[in-house]
View 1 (cartoon, rainbow, N blue to C red):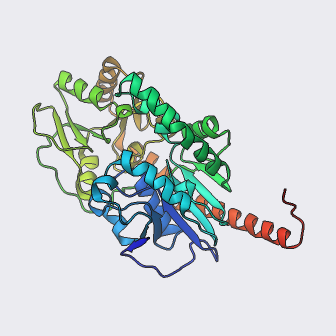
View 2 (view 1 turned 180 degrees about the horizontal axis):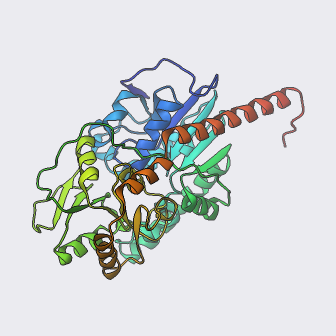
View 3 (view 1 turned 45 degrees about the vertical axis):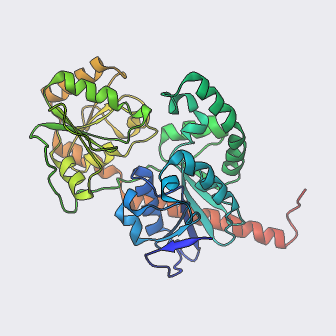
Length: 389
């Protein structure tokens, strides 16, 4: 049984006269993928989105303004809140869900692209599932024997995942790194459409208690590849700038140079972006929206010279690169920014490259092309021009 929550459900066309069904894996966390899914629902989906599970208190309040169709409304909250438990159920829910009309636009890094039906699917891929295609990295903190078992258990899911991805009308990558990972995982070439920042400078700001006058900011959930331990250890050793950590769980202050505030409101995050010396980004990201968001405020990035940061960060203009994933390299980059500050207006102008208008226009064009191709195929089939084996 499906369930809808809030928002409007007026049946408006999302792209011309084409009905667009927007889907997203799940709204049980706050991340860049969730912000992109909201934007797709608002600009293409007529304010509606289909998802496996929706926990309003755990995701962005903007989701509550949408008409949200849940495929697993009966799922107990403890299960919905745990991705390890929710994931397989979400995959099954999408696999059993069919859409036959219009076009499906799936915001996916795991499950939403498993949806079936006659409607052509435009897949906006944030990344091929790390837990499926890079389990050793994703589960790096688990014992080796457990990682081997997980690889065996996940193998059948990979077969389904590749079939569903390869049957799409078009697969879109959120950046060049993701496009290369799509090529490795699926053997497909994917056009790149970089998303806009999910949070802009226009809006209220609210100070965060305990933040000093000289601080750097890192925004990341506590995952192994985010390298949070590296960042916090460096700032503890430097004993210069304060590090403010957004994401994960707020913790009591044990080090005056590291403040873990957990989740914050958008108003508080705007204030942090506005007042930070820099955002520190040393995760192995396929894209990473944090630098793009920070640039809007004139705040530069100290970013790992790898992954998605190569597509969004320009050394000397809006960023200082960290050459490797070690404390000495991060320490040197922080010193470089302190000794050679970047022009904040140049940083702000660099952020204008990533706009909502460009993103919406590019995705709308892909939806229109998928719809036109599907219509042509149906006409050819009706005329007896298509032979099926």
